[in-house]
Image: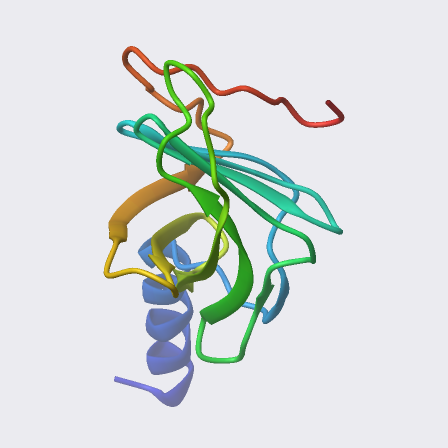
Length: 138
């Protein structure tokens, strides 16, 4: 096989793999949805639901060069059906390739961990009995 043939073959394999180039930086703004979980991201914050619980990150979620993130926030595990607080300090950790995300929420003042859950960008959350309480821009 000629050198040109090898190059054409490699280009063809790369194009057919469907792999997008990952770029570190802020998480894509919009809705990320999964089974019984959702995240609504903006360039300055994020709102998260896992089941009938909810929390907030008060900064952009930034993905590092390895695809990982770890940001502080607050989380309420007693939010539904009556929001009775309190908000606990929490860490929102996981990874994303820009299209799929794995998210874990860990309350730092208790032994509670939620997740990991898998979320897909642009997909509506499938929440079951507990609704998302906020939409982008809301």
